[in-house]
Image (cartoon, rainbow, N blue to C red; front, side, top):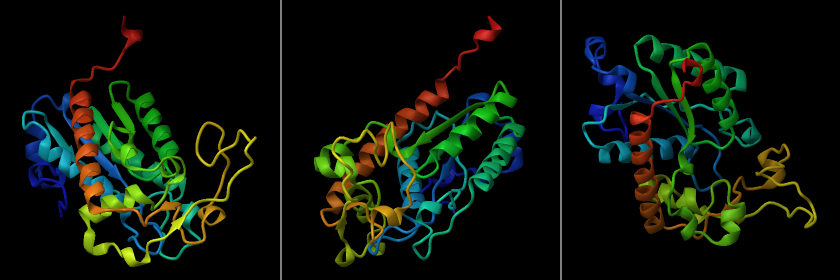
Length: 269
């Protein structure tokens, strides 16, 4: 059941008496991986986002000092993936269903006595949902620290390995994701089907963008016929190995930070 997660760090393997007796539960870091089951072009499996989150978290927990208490919940494999629903195989929750599920997970974690919960999100279509849930959980439980974090936003070397065009436009199933899958699930990658496809160019004088400060709503088929937005043909296992080591190192630092973090409480002073 634990997949990439070290078994001693897998929350479901604990007993209720283990949890009841756990010391200093307020500083124990509970991590909820949130992924997706959605199309990633003709060459990658539907499980890309979920697999990346679990592989990165598992590697980070292997590296984490044993003295720091941190546990992974089972991955939430389904996410809000309706931008991909024109492609067969995509399974999507509504924003409301995803939010309700995460609210109830948070309630359960809090009720068990834990006060630090990380939502580790690996799918680019749902950060806003997790941010809303985190705020609502904290607003109703003032001693609950909830962090909606994106797997890729820790310091890492991925940008150094990609072309400028890929860094700017390679947002789905391109070089970085394909390279990482070649590292963690090589038997599930069909490189003979890999393609390079970038979205149609916007007017040069436009302030609008696909992703960024002034973005517009789109579905994947608006941007790509193959489902790939980027260049998958340049991916290599060597790049994937480097990305995995780098992103997992970043997550070691994040978990350490969360463990020692004391949130501000200006209203108490």
